[in-house]
Image 1 (cartoon, rainbow, N blue to C red):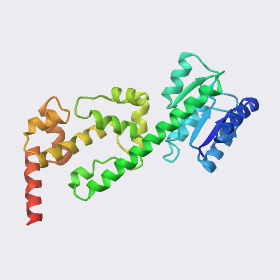
Image 2: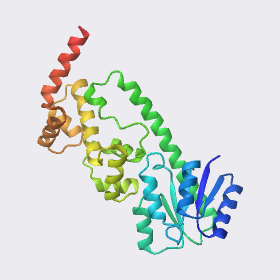
Image 3: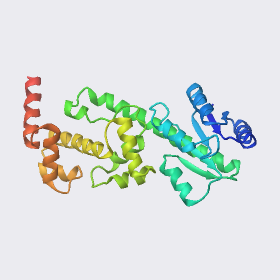
Length: 267
């Protein structure tokens, strides 16, 4: 049974949410302030949170920011349900990292649809993580050290970012395009990625490209120029510089070194 935390300082609204969620098959818990919400989250670790934005007892933006800074709570889907309905309010809510933004009055059907969508998305991401982690484990026994280093950390909350990079690294992509694809503001996404993984979006793009380049250098006879194009570089010179920065030598020299090392190990 999925657990949902409803945060609202008005008892009537909070109880309406709780009763409706329980009737819909959820384990629903409530909180009327930031302080109590934090306590409930730490004790219960809900599967999803719905919250007001700003009230005398609640600062939903601050609460969301706090949750996103903790690896344990960073991936909990967070939906604002609020009386604030101007475009500026909605934009602020989404840019703060909320997964959805509903305005009051909203029907329970609308809320349940939003919850179902976010939980389904969360489930899909977790399944994707499991598959990717298994692939990583399978590759790790044979992949060169240089390739192993670029595998994204298991359990990262930024699966959508890695998924977008995986699908698009073979062509020019920008931070703005990645941010738009995953629904975050570029600045927020950069900060979140750095906090959660220790690297920026750009660094992950580069590492994915370098991983692909290493594989192509070892497993094919394609020229360095062809490989540069295949991994998303429009200019071979840029690829040469990045590869040298990553591995301390030119692509041809790296290929030769790895082949000689493999031959020595097999002999």
